[in-house]
Image 1 (tube, rainbow, N blue to C red):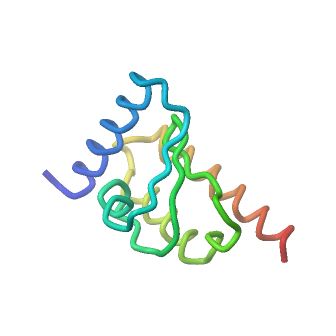
Image 2 (tube, rainbow, N blue to C red):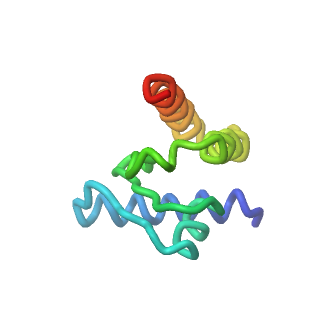
Length: 103
């Protein structure tokens, strides 16, 4: 199985667990856990809601590296998870808008 397939399986398992346990958001802060779940290698922490969306924890995370990581995730998802890819595109747009307001 490709790395993309493993990441999709991992994200799906976490979303399933969140739904079963009625978990509304998941805070992932340990770098090995963030990498396991998303393959994101940047610094900071990651907050996921029940849809798997990235939520802002602090403005310092709204970096070019994060935007590049989101672009990479969208590309990796391709046709395998179009719903998540579209969601990440919307999240990216929100981040760009927020950065524009903050700068």
